[in-house]
Image (tube, rainbow, N blue to C red; front, side, top):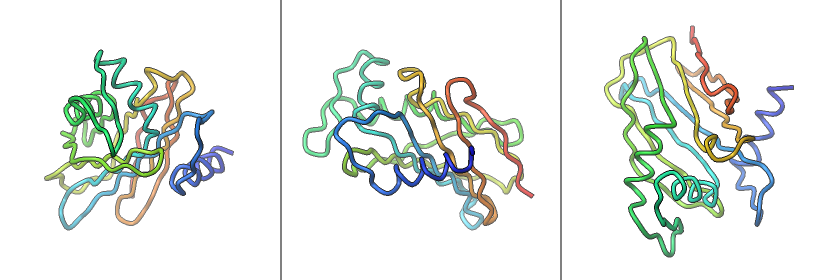
Length: 167
């Protein structure tokens, strides 16, 4: 049942599912290890209105997230929030996430993040608390791909951290 929920949730968010107001709170994060560059490439998709709300509430800001009329210290606040809410550990060491930028896609914000200079690994610990501080029922789907093997997680307020092992 959990796998079916993950697949459906990923499908709706990644297929550009559009709605005026949504009744569910979901983000999808894809983490892929690039052996050639020895880096993690991370893409996170969130609903724009939810992310704007959490940034404004958390930092007492008056940000506006929109392609047409972006206002405020958007990049700084996004970077700060991601570093606090999305954490990765390999071999017990916390990885340094580098926020690269964002794109708007209908009602979603696509965030690009990278971890550089990372030797190959078999175990990773993922903590994803994105939006769980604002929405009790926030679900964060995480897909991790290492050595052509993908594993998926469903993280939420009650269970924000999981460890994965890749053979």
